[in-house]
Length: 247
Length: 215
Image (cartoon, rainbow over all chains, first blue to last red):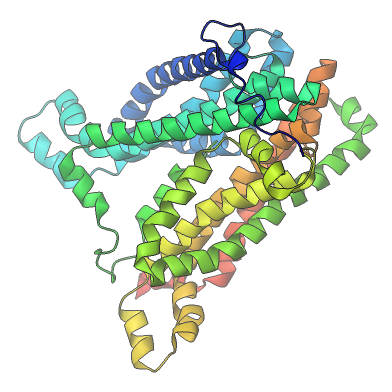
């Protein structure tokens, strides 16, 4: 019988300052993930808003979204590291490249999904383009924008784990080092920690979503069972499926 | 690039074949399991939210972690291909059981009421009316699951069975960019091909969706 929990419950691996202890790896993982998410959002959100608002270059957003979904993340990380050498920055670039498509595509889709009559009303009330964008379109598109950020977050958390294979830090180190040394209790510790982190981040982002989505917009989306059954086949379901995909 | 492909076509084709069955077998098993799960979630409404929540939790677990948590649960070694297959099946099931439930809910209405009024029993109503009407939504979910699985299989290269992912790890260790590029291109082509195949299959299975616009 293998002791699966040996590494995970060994207090020697939980020193806060210790070299390559579990808390340090966890901190690295969170830091890399958040930095990547902020950089990706800074790139993808403005472009997605622009494309959605003007509806120009829509094919870019759609093609990028589809391309990003079929791109093997592991391959992209190893490709950039092989070309540019084993440093941290090619991995970060790869992570950003993987996080941008879902954010951009969902931001675009969110802005386009806003009821046109609401936009027309805003224009009719004399709002300037920027006011229309930030007071009407963005709040109503918020659920989809956040879902894009959430799937990007999951994607980055998962890919940062695999990137440990290319000497990247974070919790993936426990998995990769354990695999190299044939120590399953270390692998198991890493796998459990990564899974818990991903679930925790997802719950946290769900809480953020509840905080930033206006109650009025949430009400409109929440009616699954009460929706008039005679309406067209559920489009939201297909959309939501498409949202929760990329990793 | 061409010389690389010419010299290694046996290895490349072997990895491609492995990639195909490692990614598509879980889609098939997962879809078959998702049908009863999704159906139950609709029939027993209190099951709906637990099914959705469990699916979201499973889907948020990174693939490498899932592949490596499974060995003690399945009682196999951590380099067994079973871990990758079961892991990807779980992702497919998590994604599709919700899709099935939402699709079945979305088709409730005049057609199902008419079927009941004509004396259809629940099972016949499910297979004769509800499932065919739900096909467009089901296929949307199936396409997403298929494409996601194909891009995820390569992670399996770290735990012994990765299909085209073996080209990534091999290329990385030898500093050989061509192998990685060939792997990425083939993986994306495979995803695109399967996606087109599913679209064509859906068109063939749901001829009424194209004429519906006129009525």
